[in-house]
Amino acid sequence: MAILLDKALWLPSFHLADSCVGGRAKKESSMKSSLALAVLLGLSMSLAASATTAVTKFASGTDKWGYTAVQNGGSASIVNLLGAGGNLESAAPLGKDAAYLVTNGTDQSKAEVGINHDFGLLKNAISTINLSYNYYKTLVPGGNASAAPTLKLGIWTGTTTQYLVYEPYWNTQGNPPTGAWQAMSINGTTGSGADGSGGWWTTGMFGQPSGAGGPPVRSLAEWNTLFMQNSSYANAVDSPTRKVAGDIVYLGIGIGTYNRSTSVYFDDVHANVNEFNETYDFQTVPEPLTMIALFGAIGAVGTYVRRRQARA
Image (cartoon, rainbow, N blue to C red; front, side):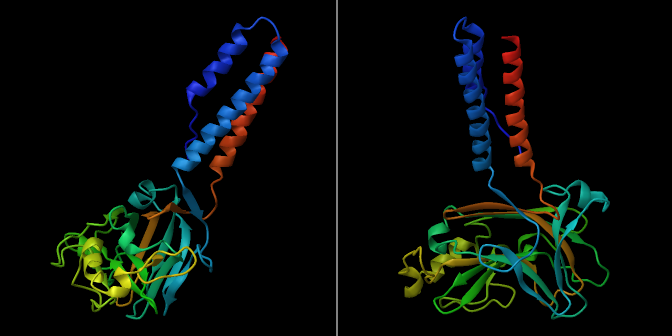
């Protein structure tokens, strides 16, 4: 993470100390405070601009990435890519770690992880929603050529959670490629046109039947138009204290059933949904770069001030 310091915040303090001829101790103290404030302000601005959360393990509970559907020989883990070689290591989107999903040679094997969170109403997010992730698929002999990590949004119907599923197979020309990182970026109109050539399929909700893994495949905006025909969806009002019909309550990435012998990596998952704006970096070990930069900057301020005092 880059630490940004605005030079305009620094220069006045330097000029003040260099131009004064009296009251040096008072002005040195003022300069020290100004420099420290500039460092902390610059750091806070950088943190605000880059809300990246490190995920070092899959845990249970709300607002945490966890195992949500890992079964029948499937597995999910966070791995280090050092020594992997090739595009997998050299083009990894965020450092040298990634989440890793595997299914075995049976149809019921599944590997999915995700986060349970109230992201707000789907209908309120359509015009501004932005989702993205990067994935890498390994070529496995006998594996399902059409398989790749899918992105799932869980939608509360008022009684249960159903899903909208974004599957790379329906959004690329041919089978998902192997041997190279792929970047997926999705907004409210991605996949417009109910022709199976892009977008999301649904497990069935608000009067729309399940696509059972395929068409109709539509954009979020198109699904929203159809869901609005259902009164419970159309009349729902967002609530900060409880789930209501149409709330997005889950975000997940996984390999579903009937995707035999699949081996994939993913990282750099970004979700901008209503008031939620977060990027997830999957790491085997935390990277405390922010704290290192903070301590380094404070140390630099102290060293500068001591040198100025020594010359006084």
